[in-house]
Amino acid sequence: MSTAQFSPLRAENLTLGYEKKVVARDLSVAVPEGKVTVIIGPNACGKSTLLRTLSRLMQPQKGAVWLNGKMIGEMPTKEVAKQLGLLPQNSTAPGDISVADLVARGRYPHQNLFSRWRAEDTQAVEEAMRATGVYELADRLVDNLSGGQRQRVWIAMVLAQQTPLLLLDEPTTWLDIAHQIDLMELMCRLNQQNARTLVVVLHDLNHACRYAGHLIAMKDGKIVAEGAPADIVTPELIEQVFGLRCHIIDCPISHTPLIIPLGHGK
Image (tube, rainbow, N blue to C red; front, side):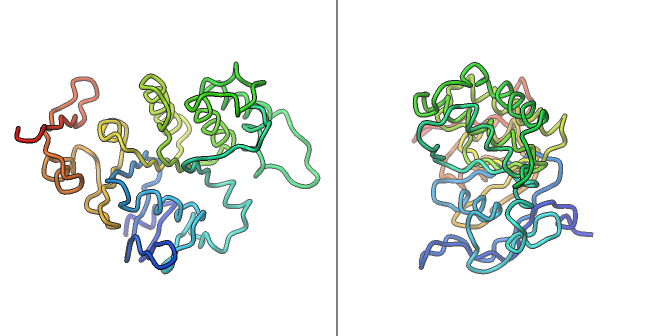
């Protein structure tokens, strides 16, 4: 029985692109259930395009995406939003909205025309703000926050959605190193304690190796390698994907691959 049958989110034979520019052809992927999957690759290799397509934010030119056995393109929007939360790149908040109000928008899939705001909605919003360290900013306007603070507010909104599947496109952008580690640890807790499946696009290779249960390496719209970081990350793979010569050692803390870049001529 194939791995794809156990995948909550999978795609087959995708052709991806923008107007006449094709980014990927015949691309198939199955997200392992209950793991943190990290997608790595150089700029413009198709990582974000793939994530946008998996979330239905973008339509494939060919091929199809399945969410829990259903074709995602045929599912009602609220049904998708109850199962899948997305943090895209460069999110923009409406003007003059407070942190608490923006995070509360993550509860939209759980509301209907006749429902009232419930105690569990308040609890979900507060838990999300506390988990991302923005609870004390609840009354501040989002427009008045720093880039790193805004990023954490957007992550809180996605967490408030309380979906079993989370897709995050470069979530550590704008975050300082301490908040980057806090966020990666939070994602691991969500995975381990709440059994959530996560798919994350990252640029930091060592973060990817340390926190991913499943790693997907892309180049030129193709998947070059995938599997556990310890099984696939080699100097040859890093040079093939990124054109970067490196040494790889065992991290003394996490015992995952630690990539040491080499300068030119070393």
